[in-house]
Length: 204
Image (cartoon, rainbow, N blue to C red):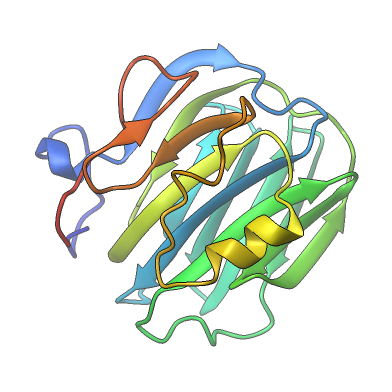
C-alpha cells in the first residue's frame, strides 16, 4: 500500500481496500479465525490491517497497529460487549514480516502474533451479521495470505503457518469452514463472497 492518504473508491483498482457483500451470519456463536501476514513500514497513527465488520454497527473483528505503538486485536460482539486485545510491547514493529490472528476457541478470543498468544478475552455471545471486509485502511506496508475461517485453527495448522516466511495457506484449509482467502498474488478464493475480490496486487 502506498504512503499518504487513506485509499478510497476513487483510487486505482490495485489500491482498493473495502468490499461489501450480502449480509451474512459468518460467525454467530461459533469459533472463528481471522489472520494474515503483515509487514508494517511506518507506525504513524492507527493503521488497520484486516477488518470483518457490519457497516454502521458495532459488530466486527479486526487487528491493527495502534497509534500508541502497540498491536491490537479488537472484538465487538453485536453491540453488546467488546474487548481491545492489546500486545504488551511493540516488538513486532521491526519492519519484518509477522503473522497475526484473532481467533475464538470456545468462549476465549485470542490475539496471536507469530503463533504466540499476546492477549485473551472470554465471551461466548453470538455475533450479528457481517456485510463488509476492510483491509489496509490507513495502512503503510504489505499484507499477504489473508483469510477468514469459521472455526479455530488446530495446533498443527498454527505451526504450519509459521514454518516459513509468508507461508502459502492455499492447501491448508480445504474444508467448507473457509469463508474467504486472498493470497494477494494472482489467485483468490471466496466461497461465500461471489461479488469478487477486495483487491489484487501482484507485486510489492
